[in-house]
Each structure stands twice: as C-alpha cells, then as structure tokens.
Image 1 (cartoon, rainbow, N blue to C red):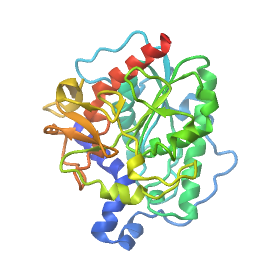
Image 2 (image 1 turned 180 degrees about the vertical axis):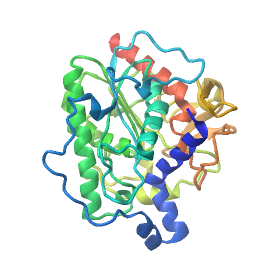
Image 3 (image 1 turned 45 degrees about the vertical axis):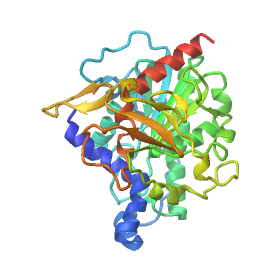
Amino acid sequence: MCARRFLAVIFWLTLIFVGACFAIYQFGQQVLIKQATPQGHFQAAAADSSPDYAKPEHWIARPDLAGNPSEWLPQGVAPAVNRPAAIFYIHPTTYLERDRWNAPLTDTGESAYRLRLFVQSQASALTSAGQIWAPRYRQAAFGAFLLKSEDARKALGLAYSDVRDAFDEFLRQNQGKPIILAGHSQGSLHLTRLLVDRKDALKGRLVAAYVAGWPISVSADLPSMGLRACTQPEETGCVLSWQTFAEPANPDLVLDAWKGTRGPTGVSRTRKDMLCVNPITGTEGGRAPSTANAGTLLPTADFSSATLASSTVGARCTNGFLVLDGQAPALGPYVLPGNNYHVYDYALFWGAIRKDAERRLNAWQHR
C-alpha cells in the first residue's frame, strides 16, 4: 500500500462531514458551494440502470472475488483461519468530481483507486471474524453534503437505495450466519438508515455495528434501530460509534452542524446525548491507557506498506467524543482544526477493532 497516497485520500474523505463546516468558516459559504456543488440538477437514474447485486462485478469485495482488497493485512499480521461471520462494509466517499450528483458504478479513474484503498485499510480490520461483502454503489458526490436542497436529498437517497439493495442480496447469500456491519463517513450515514430499515432482519443475528466517523444520538437514533449502545466488551447486538480528537479538543465545527437536527424518532439531537463507545475498551464512555491499544496502522519507512504498532496512544470518551490520551503517533499532517482526528478513526485503533470483533463474535457464538 502506498501509505503517503493513502493519507492524502483519507484527508479528502474527512471533508465529507467536517470539511464543509471548516471551509464555510475559512472561505465563506458562497465560495465553498460554488467550488463543490455538482453541475446541473440531479437526474433520475434510468429504471434499468440499478446495480444487480446478484452479479459479482457490482461488489468491490466479496468472498468469491479474485484480488479482494479486504484481504490485505499489515506486515506481521497472520490471516485468520476460522471466520464464521458475514460482514457488510459500506465504503466512504471516493468520488470527488463535480460532473454529477452520484458517482457512476463503472468509474475506473482515481475514484476506483481510492475505493480499493479504503476497503483495504478499513474493512481489513474485521477480517479475523469473517469475510467482507462491500458493494459498489452510486455514492453521493461531495457537494451533496453541503446543501439542504432537493438535489442533495435525492442524491443521498439514490446512494442509500443501492446500499439497501446490496444488503438484501447479502442477506440472501448469508442465511443463518452471524452479521457484523461497518462503515465510515458517508458509509456510516447510510448504515444508520439501514439499521432502521432492516432491524427485523438483524434480530438475533447482529454481532455488532461499527458506525465510525458519523455522530449518533442515543435517544434520537438508537430507539428506531431497536438497538442499544455497546456498554460491555462482550455484548452483542449493539452499536459502537466514535469520533476522534486530541487535546486541546474543539469539536464546535462538528457540533454546530449536528445539534438540533432530528433523528428518526423525531427527537432533536443534543451533545449530551451523543454516543461514544471507546474502540479500545469496547464500552460506552470508556477510558483506556496506551498499553491497552492493540495496534495502530503506521506506514513503513519506504512508504510501501504498513505495520501494526501496539501501545501507541490511549483514548477516553469525553462529552460524546473520543479524546486521545498521550502523544498521537505521526500518522500524517491531515489533522483538522480543533485537533480533529476523524481522518484516523480506523487507523488509530485497527488492532483494537480487530480484537473487539473477535471478542463479540465469540460471545455471540456462546450465548
């Protein structure tokens, strides 16, 4: 993996959620909108253009695909042998163009390269518990996150409809297996909707849902999912969500965009109700020293791959956010204003997420 290029790609992902707020503050709303809004208006897709998820080519990762990027592992990490879970992973935004509101399924340019990198570096954290199913979907363009317009709403709706259809095929292909769900940024946004719409299909089968890099309200979101926050490291059928900052942390840019919005329950979201589950401890509101962190992804000296470094940094949940304890490792320069480490939500805790999934799966199997 070209780590230097990977870090640059991760930076663009971050802009999907918090970058809009920062750019508005720094450059002015009109400049940002002009530079990022897709050209023209949303165009409804042709009836016969929807992806057919029964076909392998409409997946970026699934067990029968050759060259599956989710099977990548950092140096020194051995592949697992027994992997009974079925894992559905929703990738973040990789399409950064302005020529349309939704990315094409057949894009072969830089977007395709970014897509493989994200599956490779994020979904791989879960592969000791099961095999990854990651759909290609008509993701919403960057501009869809900047506007509260009908075009933006329709673009996000189209992207979600693909995710939902892919998940239904995933269910058909994995009947009876324990299920793990994961996403980041745009992927986590769609995952929050999926957890509401398909909650009946997940009953008794959900090991855990990793909704990283997107805020969740305990009272405005979780009740509609029929799920609870993960309060114990061996709890199953629960949700983990975290957003990472370092001290001195200033999450105002995130909060200003999120506070007061309404969840599917109709309840307004507030900071005091924001869910934070520490991925190191696997507990809501947990705190962990650096010695408990099982591994952070670090680029090798020649930037050709990555290693898993243990005991790099600890973390604690504070007022709804995950705040790093100790000196953060040198992952790259892409820390956003307010010491926002959203860029590295997976990389900082790759090893801990891997162990968390293994532990919860074992608990699910021995219920």
